[in-house]
Length: 186
Image (tube, rainbow, N blue to C red; front, side, top):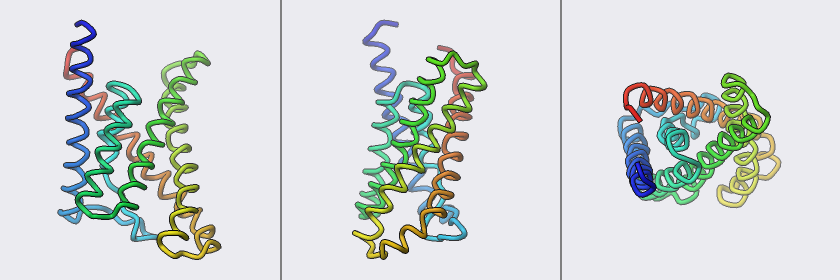
């Protein structure tokens, strides 16, 4: 397949996975199947990030980023919540950026497949926790009126949520990618 064919496959695949992210968001929202985080029920676990991780694994970081942006725009269009949609987009972009960085680092270090996967998973989840902690310290006081010291006190639970959501996203995104690779010849 030539460069044009590969670009067409990448563009089409990215569009399909971005649409799937929106379908997951709408389906979970309107079915009531989003699972609230027990200690902060306004945070909910979802599967919107699964196609985003799959886009990264199938194509590249650009595809994962574009899929994240489309998902964030879909959330904003559905809910009218600019801040919430933007925060979801930032969370997913930070996850795939960490995954990609972890993969690149593991290749440079010459790690085997198992170690490479663990490093990339940890990097993706860790970057999500770090980035979202920083953004929450801006957004909670400024846009939601949470006193700064209360926002600081919320950080451990926010980090736990982002770690759990990031791990869920990475594991299921990887499983979806592996299922695709087993069934669809290159």
